[in-house]
Image (cartoon, rainbow, N blue to C red; front, side, top):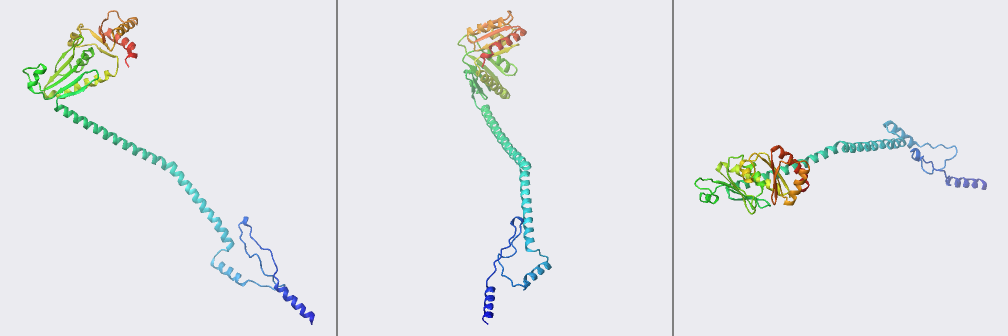
Length: 337
């Protein structure tokens, strides 16, 4: 009896002691997930305990078309990587497209926009300047006064509606000339006559010129005409002023006239058929040095010259003056800046 009870107690104690088992885990490298818990109760030898709930769940999922958990997880992992890579490639393609296709267009559009804006601004500035110039010209056409002055002291005056009582101040009597233009300078130079000859002699304006090679003499030109001559007179005065400003930028200037008018040849004291070349801005000694170099370069000995305090005049036949002008210009060019 005691042995029988002892065996029952040992059997009961053996059932309550759990049997430890190693956990079955999935291989993470292969993408498998754990399918059972880390521990399970020990079964009785010879006794089968089927898991009816698990079998019913698998049958139900199979009937509904669901994939088991393990396969679903693996499929989801693989499928999730494809949209990510596709999205990355799409983003890369979009960036490349923008950089290669759209960026040049954007830059071109921006550049064209800036260019158009710059053109509009320049056009507005030019239009504004033209309007201001036209306004000044209209004011000058209606007002008497000086319209310009050069650094050498030459001044330009315009009288569009001169009162008849004041015409005698310019040596005009009897005939009424409502439009008057005056050019004056403190000293006389040959270039003044050559510019006068080029600008005035081809117009219908009445004119008078006073010029003398004597020191202390003033240069004076008077232009007169009717009201219809006012635009022509204004144009002559403006051109003369611009030419004067260009000459004032150089220390030494060169001038040539192959067919001077009789008035110019008379005032300069040269033969009517002669051509002339003038170099202004030279002292007497420098003029001698220039002629010496020119004659040594084969300049014709038939040429005539006149040396004054501030200029040199060379006269002769037109062909000889062409040659002399070329030689003198090449030698004096370094000093003309």
